[in-house]
Amino acid sequence: MTATVVELHLPQLDEEVLEHASAVIRAGGVIVYPTETLYGIGADAINAKAVSKVITAKKERGKKPIGVIAGNLQQVSMVAATVNSVARTLIDNLWPGPLTLIFDATPIVPPEITGDTGTIGVRIPSNSFCLALLRRTGCLLTATSANVSGTVPETSIQKIQASLDAPIDMFINAGILRESKPSTVLDVRAPDPVLVREGAIPFHQIQSLLRTS
Image (cartoon, rainbow, N blue to C red; front, side, top):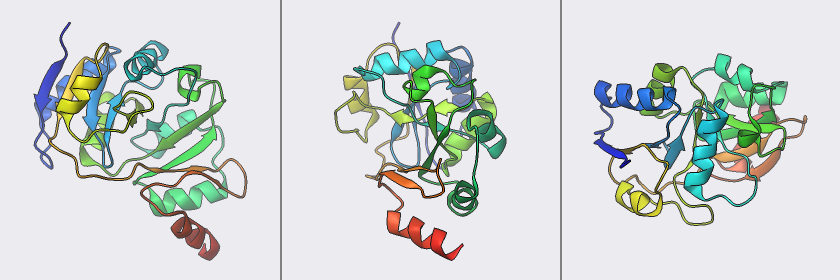
């Protein structure tokens, strides 16, 4: 089946696009959608079969964790076993935004998301479309970058379409996204957080925040 391509003119939120995308997600399908950093591949993060489709689309070799976005702290608590004081400080000051925090995962999180690590990386995005989609679906969504594993993420939906094929059900074209760094990834399971990847939020800014909190 050929994937559907729909146009989205941000910052306007198109109700028809939102409803179509959320219907695909709720049915266990997969979409490519714009975030505040890159185009991402979205599926219901708690649906193991849907997540497996994301892995197939990216042509992943081996087991790798897949990042997740949430619409609110209640959703975060569904998948994060413990939120310590350091994590709470970062959440209060830097969410919504491009900061992914790694927690021990709760039992509802499928191993396709954790990559058999027992952990989950999650964030609340600042992108208005993502937040509206999260509210509409009621799901946590995968937010892995829309590219074949090991390649550089593209900023145009046309180039993404050329590289990704089945089983993507829907591409949401929001135009050329401005070049941006991915989210910063921080492991917050211990009292001293560990930088996994420096991205849109500099690590020195995080360290300064924690020292003064």
